[in-house]
Image 1 (tube, rainbow, N blue to C red):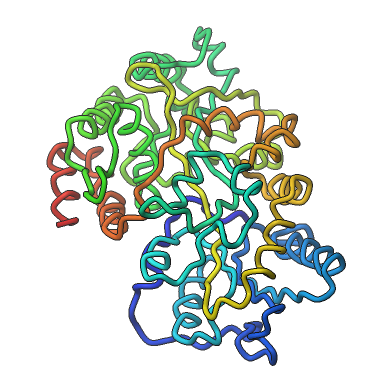
Image 2: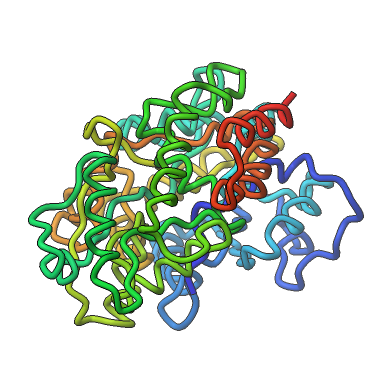
Length: 416
């Protein structure tokens, strides 16, 4: 099962509490774990089964070790439900801190001086191969510390059969066109909804960001979290206006993203903003669904979207392992190896070379064009974790009549 890619784990290193026992498969107890040629790698499972994440990493590691017989990579896999606790526990001792960690949040580790700069753990050609927007998103105070693993952006999925029935000839580019199309689809009846608007607690900040970014808004200005701005208000009001037309699914304030995706796959919703793995879900659950993708509608029609990336990062500890880490990561980011990994996981490559190699892949075809216009959560700001938590709790209330301005004010107040 795919992990909800966007779900930010910011603040992992800052969470306090009673340390949990190490996983039985942990590498902390392995003898020789501090050898300069032994890499301890902690990673989450994005997918399960015989061809899932663990199998992919096992294959990559086996081939790397075959080509580099002096280096050993010890892999520890954890679920996304447990990796927070495992990371927190391991960071309590230098001897158990992983050498390489795959997670989304890196800023607190970099801010505490725990990570190698990216330039120390991959070669210059690898750094140059990474999409600039994602490299910038992996940087703190002008220096890149993390390596984007792969990308997830959003794009509009629309049901072409419902479009035809409603007499809609092209996908909407603006909010006005989106609202008009949603109303026409809603009018078809039969339990079909025009637009799926998930403002439930699962990921309200994701859907909201698509609309606020679409109005020219942002969640941060430098070091300051900026929620209560005219642009963000315009985006939230646009969502409220769509709700008021009755052209969304019932009770959007309590609907999670997975619910609207499933309804779209069943042919019950005309349009949704969705993720790269949605393509694989459609192929598995309803391969006969007639659909297409298009850029996310915005206020003016100029494309912009939400981008999210999980990262690889390396803890410098005593500094002795940089060369071994660099060899492993250079191997992983080589075009053929990295492209195969991304293709199997169903996300978007963040390197130019892998994007070229996967040019005919359905996910890359649908989403590659979104990368240059992707904008990001300010996840390198420690107050963002608070802001997004309040957005999850509060944004759905606009569907019950709450004033969008007051909702944004409450979120802003929580960050002070």
